Image (cartoon, rainbow, N blue to C red):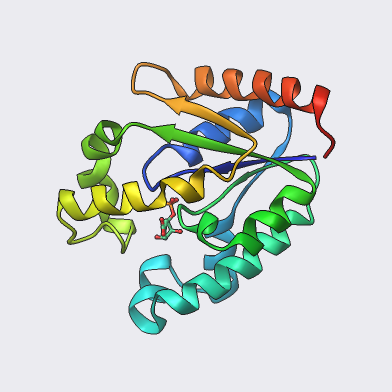
Length: 174
Ligand code: S3P
């Protein structure tokens, strides 16, 4: 059984995932890192040389590869939810946990986060907010939703997630 973290760019999936892996003893896998390793290029390079569509193909391959794991915390790229086949694959042996911040959390982090994120770089705050709102129905395709705030540390979020996952598994098979 894996724990799969979904959520918008700069929500804290990587930091929270790291805490959650430490807390649970699960390994930590990041689909963006799998994509970069497979391509031998950074996300920025993949977008600028081959475009978003090619990135999305690599992301699907990475999601399916990660879905084969067991006892892993799988931190997904923010757009992984856009293709149903990605989430369907990850859900077979995983609990899908959506990390849901209010937009104010993203607004505060956007400037620092933009340089490694082609879909934030050079975008106005209005454009980022529009994408944030358009993505909401895709993030709602989850088993557990966890509110993310700046008031809680990654390890506090991780504790909350682990409790919610254990509760979920009492009533649901994975
Ligand atoms: C993307 C999110 C990024 C990365 C790529 C596209 C998105 O991952 O996969 O830049 O479409 O939301 P993070 O969520 O880790 O920033």
